[in-house]
Amino acid sequence: MKETIPEQTGQIHEPEKFNFPEIEAIKEDMVSLCLQMKEAIDEGRYSILVSDEVGGRIPTLILRKIIKQIHPEKELRTLFVASGQGSKLPDYRSTKEYNKLREYLSVTVNDYVLLVTQFIYSGATVQKLASALRDAGHGLRGLDIATTNSWGWEKADLEKGIITSKDGDESYRRGRWATPQPIAADNFFIGRTSGKSTDEMEKRHNRLTGVSKEREYSPSPVLYEKAMEKYGKDMNFYSDDELKEIFGIEEGDSAEIIFTKKWETPENMRRYEDVRSKPLSDEEKVQLRSDIIKAREDVDTLAGFVLDTIYGYGQNVAK
Image (cartoon, rainbow, N blue to C red; front, side, top):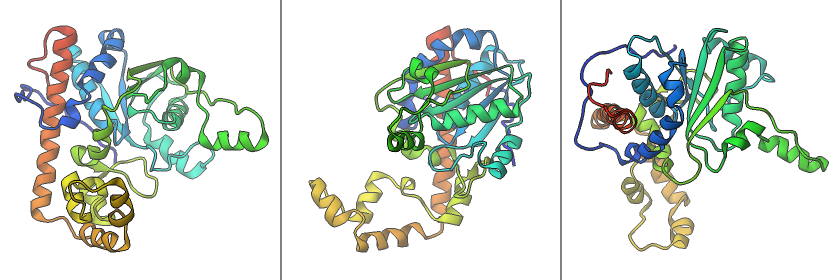
């Protein structure tokens, strides 16, 4: 089922500080991103935001709040699409799954889409999503891509297109250069091209957003609690301290000791499987839901910070 963002009004929650350093870590990236996008935001360019789930959700929600503050009366649809490295995002060669994705992408020829992702590794995910969006929208009125971090990709590189690992391997075997696959975007906006500002967010985004992805491809995200009921807890559910306790890692252990005698040894992996396979306790459920609420507070705070920095105001941001 497609997820919708309810329109709300009222005062933004303004805690004195961020609840999660993982979200605070991207604030400079978001300012840089929005400065580049200022013309597009000011003119009300976008009719729909598409989040590359799960990592794209928090940047998407921040951008949505900023745009709605500048254009409070504007209809701004928001679509969350499960994609990314582990979800086997289909392309046109996978007919059944690709048609499922196209149907889910409810865009039209009149839409100008902003596709939002947290980071770009190989570029394959945004390349596939951009192509599917163009296909579903019969070309679209326009499509821009925004990322908080591009991991070394410069805008000029993305404009030239990407070479997937599969194409690269094939070209190596044949002894000839692979042809770059174009990314069907009108504009690329990059918050940061290097650095580790998104590293911790990557580990925690399921917990902070409350959503995850199915093991078998589905374009619709699934509630994190439901995913854990089906598959057990993933490693990122636990804090570093909890993982150290599970695997018996002690202060001062060398990398050799950790990886040869503690990490993923049969005994410790059995212990980890016993822990992760247990159903969520009531206490864990309460904590998880509290984390989601606090993360939404941080979204409000970061949106306000960007508005203060770029426009000189951030108070009274409509939720």
